[in-house]
Length: 296
Image (cartoon, rainbow, N blue to C red; front, side):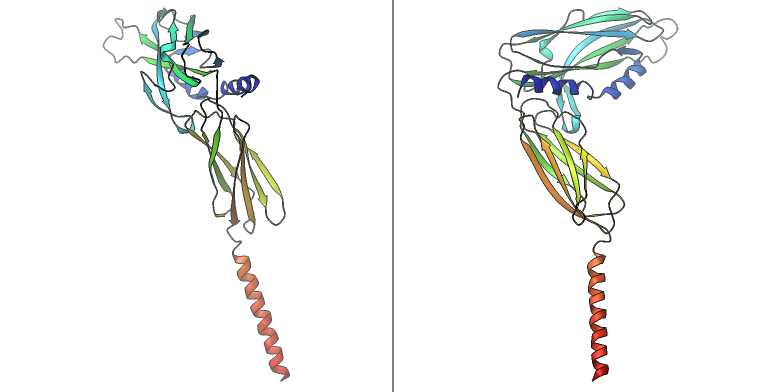
């Protein structure tokens, strides 16, 4: 996979991974960060510095700390669990905070620096971790009898270690209903079988078998972790209840290989047409037989 292609993939990563979820969490615990995702490619035996701005948006001083942990990624970009060590894809041991603890005054900012030290023997491909910024509210004479809740904001660190990388993939399934009404929901399950994180390019195309009219839907831009799959879904609101359609999913993995699957589905009144035709033929034949009998 080319360097330019990897850079494009990681730029796209910056606009996706749990962004909305992080903003909501930050508001609840009165702390914010200017960036919740850092994604880049790096060589073995190299050091990369990450800088993020942390702000105390509360009206009280807060003690804070930063702790990095590995996580286990699941399907559809989910996190199955947090763990101290992910043997295959983890990198928490590579991340070192220059200042792991600090106190922030109300409405003040602080720049936090993290060093990501890629070992010389690092395995090629995807590695990821979460740097959790934790808050510990100050206990004073007014709140010592109350329940005090701290919190944390996760900063995701996603790294592809350069080397003999593979961006292979597999379009596991295209799911389409057999019969549809006023709308049709289709789903394409794409699996990352390589060793790097990437965003597959794909579309689902629907064609009316009789009129040859085609409608194409571009799949959303979403990265897929190695060894997991992502379900790309579309909803089509223009099927005819008397129509017959083919649906084809076309996806391209990071190696540039095309993957295709095809399904067929019908409008919910399509099967009435053959019966109406047979009924019409039966009536015509009955009419002809009746006319013949009169002439005898």
